[in-house]
Image 1 (cartoon, helix red, strand yellow):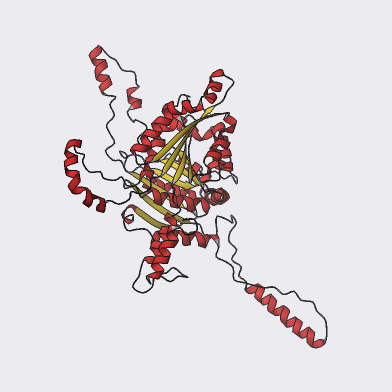
Image 2 (cartoon, one colour):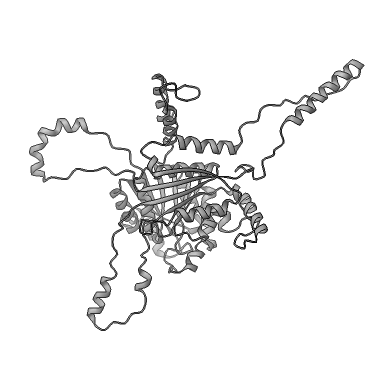
Length: 487
């Protein structure tokens, strides 16, 4: 499977059937679409099969909701019968049922890791000495394990007691054999899981301003060799009850009957719309490539829809933050021709002139072209069963941050009673200078005060990227998922 992955085997089979050309992968006459299927199968071969989840007590509701998206399409089980009645019918249906059975799809493996701070207290030392027993009875790990098994996930969990300064290194080491590390942003704003959470707009905005947790995330991203997904929660999975604030108001009660009726008002109805909508602004680069693959895997879940927009910034690419030069090689060729003519003239006169020969070759495709080609290949190779749930678009933008925030406001939050929407962005620190420069120039010309004209990113922007910070500050009513590619 390592030397001959699934996508390669399918390419060989399609080539032997005469459906594609081996060198280009394009379909031959009468075999339209075969090359696209192979392209998608190649991408699917890189999908997430094992993920590591950092378990935090304050982030458990939204972590469970996000992890359940990897369960895929749940199998429809037949209605159960009483064992005594099922035995009599099993003899007649055994042969037919075995012929109709298909092997189940391999479930995604989810490894939950909870980290506890090692202090000088005696209880911490006891936890380290009895770590196996502590893991088996930890309520957070057991909740994650039970929830995962009920949602078609192969789950495991572990509790480690390490110094807080080693949290980042421990996470990076434990996730080295996984395809994705899910890192929730602290709901408290700091490393502690027990701090009282402010239930107001100020507390939500200050979530990204905690220097302790920002430093922890920065160290984890620097040391992790696997792709990392940072989840900044905003009522994902219906984790926040909208009626809580109203119930906490001071009310007047007259009797025990009134107290009983007040308890009845605390009942939360189940989510009638379990759907999620994902908006993903695509710019290019390794981080966005990884994010695009992740979005297409999440869309395999029947309750997930996605809008993927390619924002093309003229004159910029992710690997080169300066404008792409427009000078062609005509001048170089002309100079070389002039030098050759001068050398020939000198040769006729008998003079000795030393010339330097310059070899000019056609330049390879730029990263901007590669990003557009990757986006187009996955758009054309989308399977038919996913086409009704995914929309691909390409737009040209000179103010990318402003355009992304405006489009995200139209995409997310349209179904306030659903299970929560998600804005997926690539970390793409190489785009920070471009995004700052483009929007700062427009802000200087148009007088927009909300765009900061700084040339370098600091704080959360330096850790998560300028785009992620601006999308979160826009308070769009959706969670933000920041993706960093693996090394």
